[in-house]
Image 1 (cartoon, rainbow, N blue to C red):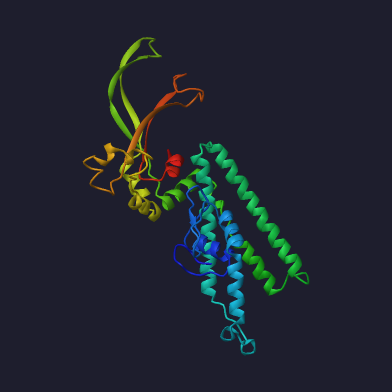
Image 2 (cartoon, helix red, strand yellow; image 1 turned 135 degrees about the horizontal axis):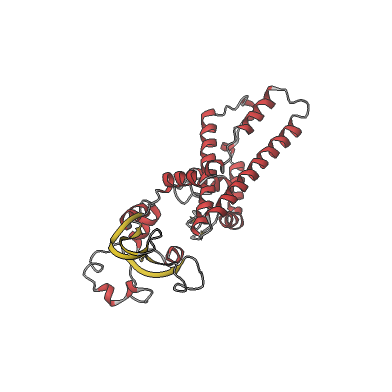
Length: 323
């Protein structure tokens, strides 16, 4: 099984998926993109389960054939009589364990970020994280008790049993580092470089307000403010991803079909876009929304206006996600 990123070979679909998760840090989510790296196959997938099923169904026979060829090759036969001991590098095992723990934490953080992106309230996110923390803790405890019960049934005071108990006790609960808003914000900022909003002042105006002490109405100066997420910092964060950078370079127009504005005569004759093929296309639009009443944008006094932008260089499926 060949990795589509580094072209390395792996013995089975499970080993390949583990390699993609731990070595390349791919996490489950809406932005997951997997390609089948096997020869002659151009399928792509958005989930590890679909990717694994495809490898087992479509490329499982080739894997069995390669194993049979290796077993039938006289030069590949191993003389087990000369092997007395197999040494396993402790450093390699510790490094792999550390990477596995890091991947699990990253996967949990990706799930939480999907909940926040879907508009789930902060209190609901906290409840879900705390509940998952308890569930994982119960699973760890149940697994430890089951292993000790069936493997060390003769006695729990042996040195090996104590090592196994210490191993289970050392397992880190991935939701523990994400069980508060402060921890989640700190973790996601360090990992994904979240661009924080900036408060900006539009200008000042006079507003009439009632003085509660005197009962009179006074003219007071009020500053009109808005929250702004810097576009330049957002673009810098986006294009640190190699996948999105390659998508920008591969964007091209079509001479035979009209798919979007890039295929029209206005775009092809534009003084900038017609000469600079790698130019970032920023499309901005405005929309009102009601924060207290979901039935309409102008049905109450708690309405806000939002300015959004999308990148036309992206494939339509990404703009449908982020737009």
